[in-house]
Image (cartoon, rainbow, N blue to C red):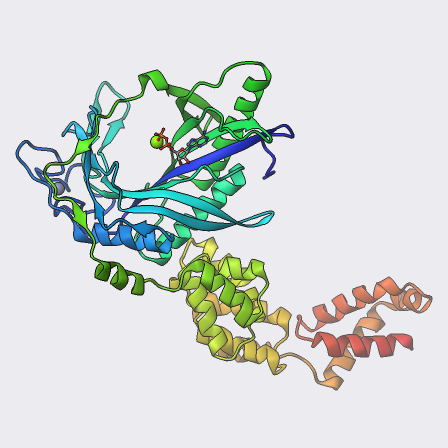
Length: 482
Ligand code: ADP
Ligand code: MG
Ligand code: ZN
């Protein structure tokens, strides 16, 4: 995607509000389960259905997870924060207000680093606060709508960024990075199809060089990286065209219609809610002792940026490889385990990013489910190194390892895949090939050197890919000389 969607004269400005559902077992203010996919309203109680007289009880884990996220994103943790009521009416919100945080959020002023086409870039985090999710209205065909309150009271973090992004690609990179970090620290599964991670994107454009921000439009509730990028691209173009036509940009909320590929106005600023925030009287303010912050900080794993740098400096991997391998923690761990067994880092990287990922993606399986273990790959790479199999045959062997879970040695024995380095065997294969193609031999000898590839191919075919390529090349050259 071009980073210059706004054209030569304009610049896009983007800030994201990302909602991440926390991986707690129970909801934020009651003991109901947070498991996904249960029958409608089967995971509800008086608290999360907003019955009069019920009282919220704070889920401590939700607070800890939010602090953990704040620390992973370099935020300062507020020693004192408070919950607030955000008042509005909607059928999926029976209480008539959402418990959120307003003027005193848990985390403030952090940063997340993304990779852009121009190198590393820091995106500021304005705040991270904790809130409850609302239920879900279901509009199916027919005269009725339904309300499912299973999602009501799910613990959500809202991560608000500074307006630091300048292109849809940067917004996409930022969101991917957030997902990576959240999954590393185990606070959110990042499952976008199930809505565990969704985003409102705010976007404006301004003439290049202008300091003041343009009027922003908010694009609501997108749950795929591609939609975010596409919606932003469309919206930036729309705003630039409007400005060039002398039309004002209205501050409004718009929705992305992915089928039509356009954004549509949902409500203008005038129709925006006045939420009448006020402190939540049913919950005590949250005070976080220094000791707790220290303990949570110590519980953080090595974060993706640090791991990525280490993979470059310790293993000598290209930036690209390090980026790919550290996007998911289990992949990074799988890679490191294989290297610890003595395999060459770059070779392991190639196999993981190539064959292994291809096979895993085919069935949508995570690396934890791989039937090939680090041990098994290390053993197979040793067979290449000691000349037992060729790199080409190794692909077949690896495929078979993945499908059957058998070790490489066994597959090589069973299928007779041992590489032919034996001079006699190679010689007879080459002689047969030359005898079968006398005119090609003649043309080659007459100076048509590009025919060499043809002979290599024929020898490989005759040996079912088992000829040692280097030995076969050497010998072919000699014999073709005549
Ligand atoms: P609101 O009160 O409408 O939610 P905020 O000031 O809280 O607005 O900002 C919400 C998000 O919009 C933040 O991520 C912020 O970075 C972004 N934002 C604010 N102003 C602009 C702007 N002019 N252009 C693009 N993004 C903006
Ligand atoms: Mg907002
Ligand atoms: Zn409940």
